[in-house]
Image 1 (tube, helix red, strand yellow):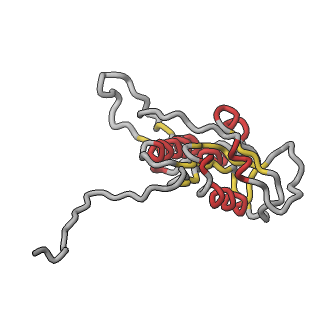
Image 2: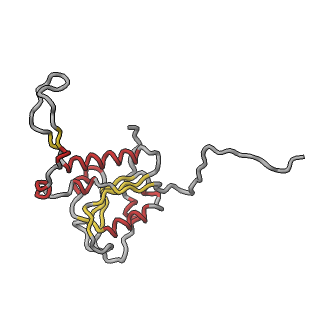
Image 3: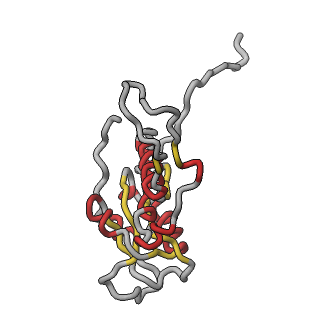
Length: 186
């Protein structure tokens, strides 16, 4: 006679959600890297470790190499690093929401109108600054919003819309117009 004991082994277990929601929200530094003014960029000097000295006058294939050290642009390095990190998030298999905020400031949240942009418009639009409080609000609101799944966008203040009259902006409505990225295998 059996006593009712049993053994069940799990290799993998997943709880299914009722609807899709982002599993990860990633704050990328990609937009802010492109926002520094030309004067700011000129003031940035690469650290000593950012130069590559060549040991001889010829390369692997007998090409003449300059004795000048190769200088790595710190802004370009930051953009490349941000793009690399975003690729990791996209290839993780998780549903994601990638936010590229403009330069962050400490002004109170909810005062300025926010705007989300995607694609080529996002590169041109990444100007100005955005409140840390506003970025936090967007992140929290996006966590439970299915419209934020597999979306990457730039977040900045609007140059054209008037200041926010309501206490909070409807982030969900703002996410509604964003297009999910097409899945690509990299």
